[in-house]
Picture (spheres, chains in turn blue, brown):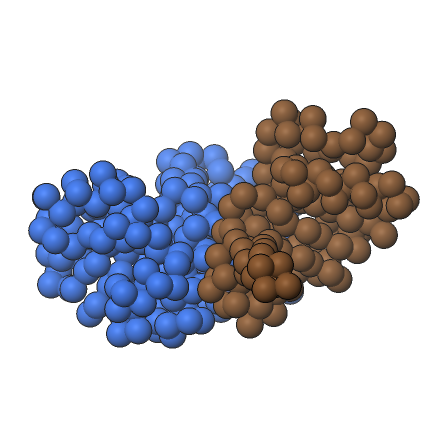
Length: 220
Length: 132
């Protein structure tokens, strides 16, 4: 695959290295000549000095035949524009943007960026896993559909304890798939499954329903 | 009209003062409070320190009820991003974007943004003066 990487910082450097190792054709673009020189010295001539948001620079980089563009600069706005120019001007099939402010994820998706990676969110997810008292953990995102698989703990004081699943007021679009009992035994969820204290509930939900789902299962 | 301006440089400050004088409700944003020195002493609008590419800051500036949004910072990409937020996230009815780079301006114009390139306009103006 021919992949263009915009931004030759730490992320760009190691990304380029890994992609080259996998046998891809890689070109890195950066506005800073010093960074380009460093990459070229260490990885061979793979970096060109230029602004990856500029049409002329991307044209010269052969964006027209690129299979993918990955924008990993420190600035969200630069990553957004690089991906949009690639997508709309050069019809690059797949664009990936690094995001620093996690709130920008929705905007980038809305504006047609195929994939976004937020280091802040990734670290936050790990924090959730490390802190077992956290009532809701994100396990998996299902592609572009917005649906996600989450795990919710039912604490002893929760209003859901002792109730059948069909009596619990789950938000629309949320489905409980599995209940893992305190002794680690998983039970397939049915409307008649009775929730117990310290159950772990595995459910499919949507980001906007997360709070309501957590409230329904772990709230008093 | 209720107007939010991002970027209190010479153009932003002058526009804010003009609109304010005509009785419009103006909020101007800049990352650096020092920039607000450019506003006219009689400016009655709101000057807010903050990054206009941040949703929270835009909300604080009243973007949800604004009739128009203008982005005139020095960064083309910052302007482009803020304008797309104003248009696509907050549904502001009128959004104007300054983009120095003429090629980038053409692309975003094609993508539905009302974008103005001062580079093109000023070059054209100079040409007309020279010929006239």
